[in-house]
Structures are given as structure tokens and as C-alpha cells.
Image (cartoon, rainbow over all chains, first blue to last red; front, side):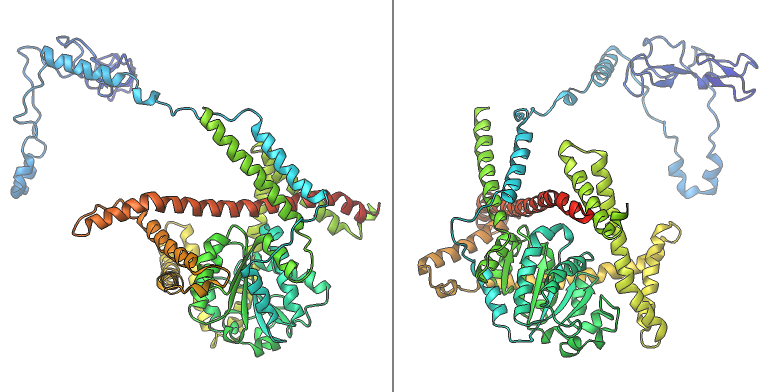
Length: 404
Length: 233
């Protein structure tokens, strides 16, 4: 529909003159492409989108602005002519842009070429039809078989009583930590950073409890902190277990919860300047941190015998090494989740970490070192079951792949 | 509901934990509304907890110090202003005001991270690699030649992994052949070692998450007796 610019009457697409006032609408007439439906100017020979030929080569009936033989073409005056006088230096830029361009040739060869292009572009892209080769699908139900098997292994390790048929031997790194804590003098100050969230409680709590119990048996004085916002929740939970056994002593004198240390790298760097620089109040009572005897006795990291980082992530321990250990020579022990251990082995081998213990296996070994049987034997059995299933899956998948 | 009065918080806590655990485990059947609800709850509660903790442990004590002794703790006032300027990023017209605190944050963070990485990771690890390792450093349980082979393997492995990261650089100059050999080592051995490392990381993550699964199943097994005991039945 074409709206007449003079009277506003609504005209049909093909009207070259307004049916109400007779005004010229030739410049507004469009031709719809029969292939793609694009609206082209009526004077166009080819669709500007798909290059389809819109009308016969010698058909100029719908061409707009076309001139009949003998008709004089009125060229409008150059609207920039006056500017040329104002800006004579820029006259080169006002040259008629179309001067010298040869007219469009419409011989048979050109038409054929255009038709080929139009056909090629109008056809569906063959590349779009290419689909990746379908992967060999796993047999139906294998997903559920695996899920149920894993659940049964986990469940079996809980409900079926089982004892390990072999003696657990602690690895060197676990022995080193246990021996280091055992050699602490009475009343030694130890900083414990609970850098794990409740998500990792199932894995990290047994390890933290084992370490805290040994520390409390040595009457170590504990500075408790966290560089994770959710870490203090973990600390409170583990400390509650230890407190039930009356092993913690007096708050403020034998142990203190300093709280969450914000800022990651910059927070740890601040910690090296002193505890009262990093913390203004304690976590539990919001009292001045300097009012506690434990902070008075050990105001800086240099007065701390050991720093034990309980971390869910390798980056946290790396941060401790980079920002604290590189500035203050401390004994740094890392107790981490199993997923963090591989990334931290280089720090242990380079002796930057005094010890590195990881995951529930370390908790089991730690308990074995202290002469007790950890309540987490079942996890070791479950890991063995999981490993067995994974090996079976790997063998089965490879055989299936070879068969395909 | 009188039997609930004494242990109501524990009962509500246990019941909520049970429902949320089951909602998360329902993801085994595909994405569903229960899982989405649990996920949103966890994210929301975490954000709320962190916000409250930051206010309680970090902001409020320092605000009190600044208000009581502004002459001593004037720098906290400056930091608060910078922190408030960060909020200006929310509006297009005031966004430019946030550039200063963002610049300070990024600048200090990058400087600390760079210095720390150099002093705490790169140099010590390179030093430990280049330091000759005497056999006795490994302990008395192993023969000496095993330790020497181990040390050589560590050095070759490190060079191979490093080589796997540079083989796209065109080899030119007098050391072209050495560069090509190093690239070949990286393509073959280096990539293999990286795959082994990723495998170890993945295995560790698998052990971690399997442990969590056992913990949750144990919780579900014990929740019914605990609830009955709390209710008094």
C-alpha cells in the first residue's frame, strides 16, 4: 500500500498515480520478487537480495524513471553547487560521482551470468545440510544402570559392616603433619584457617576434626580464621564437636575465632602486618581483638608456630604461599580436598608446604597413626567399589568403541 | 502440635534439609522445578549469609571505629566513599564515577597477584626444578639410580609441557631446529602429560563428589529415626 504524500490517500502497490488527487507515485512503486518476496524498486531489473530477474530484459514498462525514446531526461540541479564556491579547495570532492561510468550492459552473456548467480544464491546452502556424524549411542538404560550401581555402592558402604582386610599405612606427608603437631611444645600458638564451605563438609570435616583433636591434645592455642565467607560456619561446626569433648579450653585465652578475612590476596597480605591490622574485632563477641590474651601473646604471624590451611580449593593454598609464605617464613601445612591435591604437589615437593594431606583417605590414615579406627573406613571401601565400576565402564566403553 | 514445641527448630531443620537433599538429587531425572527451587534457595541463602556476615564482621566494626575516632580512622571514611562510588556503576550517567574504585581494585589486585606469583610460585618452582637433587633427599628406601632417573624425568616432563604451549610460534633463526624439536616434544609428550594431569584432577574431583554423595545418602538414612526421636515417638 502506498500513502500519497500529497493527500494521504491509500493506494495499491502498483498504482503509479494517486487515485484521489492524481499525484505522481511512480517513485514509490515496488515489485515483489517472485522467489524471495523482497520489495524492490520498480525500476530494478534484478532483485537486490537474491538477484532474481524481475522482468524481461527488454520490458521497461514498469521501470520507474525510465525514459521513452526521444523523451528528455531532466537532470536536477546539483544541490552542492553553491558549496563549491564556499569551499573552493574541496572542489575535487564535489565531482559528479557517476561521470565516466559506462552504462550497465544487458547483453546475453551478462544476463546469463546474472541468472547463474541468482540461481546459485537462491538455492539452499549445501553446507547447511552437513550434519556432524552421529555419535554411537550408548545402549538404552545404561545411564540408569550406572546411576543405580553408584548409589548401591554408596549405600552398601553405609549399611554393610565391613573392615579393611589390610593395615592402613600413612603416607609420608600425613606422617609429617602428625609428627609436626606431636612435636609442638605445650601452649604453642597455631593458626588454623577453615577455607572450605559446607559443601565440602563431608570430605573435610573428618580431616579437620582429626587435626584439631591432636592439636587440643597437645594443648595448642588456636587462632581460627577463614578467607572464605562461608568458612566460619565450617569452623563453628567442627569446633562444636571438639568443644563437646572439653578439649578447647577458655575462649580468648586458649582459642579465638578471629572471623572472615575479606580481600583474598590483599587480605592475606594485610594479615602479614599483624592480626590487629587485619581484624578489629573477634567473630563471636565483636570485642576489640587486642583485648584477648591470645592476641596479646601472639600479635603477628611470626609468633605462630604453625599455620594449617584447611582448603577446598588449590587456589586458596596457592594464595597463602604467594602472599604470606613468600614474606614471612612460617611452617605452612595444607589439608585439602582430594580434588585440590594434584595442583599442590609441586608446592609440597619444593618444600614450600611442610605437609600436604588430602581428603578422606588422609583422615583415615591420620586416625590410623593415632592408634584409632576412623569412622570413615567405609569411604575407603566405597572408593574401591567406585574404582572397580569405573574400570569396568572404561573397558566396556573401549570394547564397544572398537566394535563400532 | 504440642510435641513440636521443644524440638521444633531441629525438626524443621531436618525436614527442610531432607526435602532440599531430595530436590537436588531429583536432577537425576533431568532439570525440573524442584531442583531449580533448591538451586535458587541455595544461591539466595548464600548471598544473604555472605551479605550479613560482611556487614556484621567487616563493615559495622569499622563504621563504629570511624564514627568514634574519626581523626585516627579517617582512612576508613575514604574507603567507604570509594565503596559507595562502586554503586554508581548501576546508572549510565554516573558510571564514570565508579572508574576510580574499580581501577584501584584491579590495579592493586593485579600487582599483588603478579608479585605473589613471581615470588611464591614461579621462582621457587623453577629453583626447585633446577636444583640438583641428591639421592638421599628422596629417602633411604630407594636405590640412587631410580632417584636420578626420576629427577631427569621431571625435567624432561616440565620442558615437554612448556613446549606444548609454544608450537604455534613460527620457528626462525639459528635455533630453528632446536625449536622444532622442542615443539615436537611438546606435541607428543607434553600433551600426554597435560592429559594425565587433567585426569588426576578429574579423579580427585570424582572422589570428592562421591564422598559428598555418601554423606547425603547417610543423612537420608538417618533422618527418619532422628525425626521420630525428636517428635518423641
